[in-house]
Image (cartoon, rainbow, N blue to C red; front, side, top):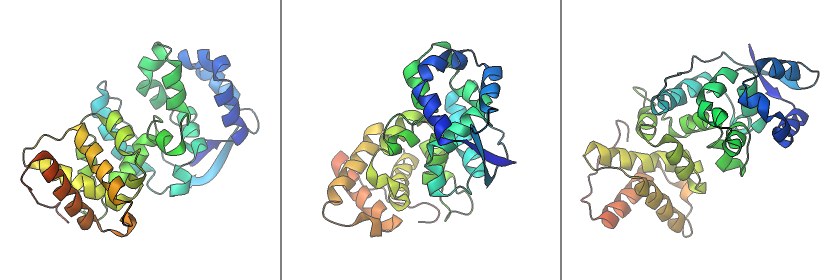
Length: 257
């Protein structure tokens, strides 16, 4: 099977005329969607291999989100960064090959006719980076990509498990809104520190993520962060946060760092 995505004209039509089409979304009107997408030129079949992943449909979203980050990323790990930033790819997957997951994950929004959230969950409503971590499918892939640690052969998802264990949606939007967290070394460096804190019994809160990115934002004005190694980022963040919160540095590295 090949991954299918929307033509640019189709994407514009659906996004622009969502008000006219929204009842079909509310009603999960598969017949209408199938008729619409079967029209010539609506859908483009790519050369990208795609095997539909067996997504989790757990009634507890906090459980399924954590599982689905790993499931979707493993299934589509071969996407290039350019492909994974394309709205047509994620909107296409959601409307075509993974529509059942869309119905499941946005059940409350569809039942409640929450137009604002439906729009941001289906399309890229905000700037491109923020949208990637709000869209109901792309955020799973991108959190997987940014937390996947290929250097840890035993469990490359060790930081993914930590990041997704609670407040997934809020954490993803908040943490990855920073330009600096586009760099995987920085992301893994920050998360390594907070993971080690938690392992030492220090409760990790949302503000810790915020303060770490604020600190690197300031430091980034005086040095080029992109040249730093994971260990250098971890050491800097560890020292700053420990002083800020009056916590004795716990040190410690991941199984690799």
